[in-house]
Image 1 (cartoon, rainbow, N blue to C red):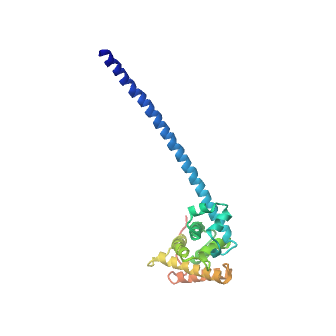
Image 2 (image 1 turned 90 degrees about the vertical axis):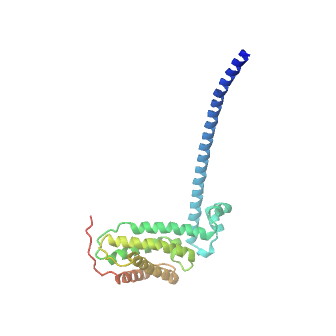
Image 3 (image 1 turned 135 degrees about the horizontal axis):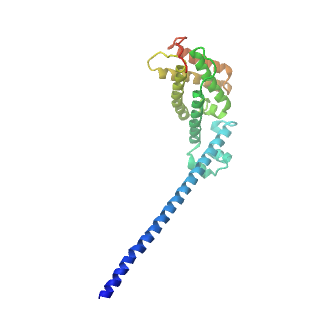
Length: 244
C-alpha cells in the first residue's frame, strides 16, 4: 500500500507540470490567433477604405460630364471598376454617395476659408470679398461640387447638410474679420455672418441656374449682397487690431 501511495503521489505531481506547459502553449496559440485576426481585420479595413475612395472618385469623375440625376450607383461601380455588390455594401444608393462627397467638399471648403489672408487689408469688406473669391475659385475647380452644393438639381437632403456647413463657414468669416478688426458686440453675431454666407450662396445658385457656372458678375453680386447685409450691422470703418 505504501508503494502504491508513493507512485500515486509522483503521478499527481507530474500532471500539473504537464498541464501548465499545455496551457501555456494553448495561450500562446490563442495570442497568435488574435494577432493574425487583428492583422486580417486591419487589412480588410484598409481595402474597404480604398474601395470607398475609388467609388467617390468615380462619382466625382462622372459628375464632371453628366447631370447628377443621370447617374446611378451601378454607374459609379462600373466607373470605379468595383463589383456592384461591393458598392452596395458601402452605400445604400447614389444619394448616399453624394452625401459622402458633400461631407468631403465641406471640409475642403472650410480649409480654404481658414487659410491665412495674404497682403494688406484696408477694411473689413475686403476680408469678406477675399473669402467669397476663394469660394468661387473652389467651385470653378470642382464641377462636381457645383452640382451637389449650388446646382439647380441638388437634393433637399444634400442642401440641408450643406446648410450646417454654412453655419461653420459663417463662423470662419467672423473669425477672419475679427482677426483684423474689432467687431462690435451685436446680438447673435454669428447668426448674422451665417446669413451673409447664405446670401452669397443664393447668388451662386442663381448663377448656376442661369449660366451653368458661377460667373464673375454673379460673384460680384454675391460680394455686394453679403457685404451690404453685414453693413447693416457693422460700420464701414472698424478699429484695426494690432497684429503680432
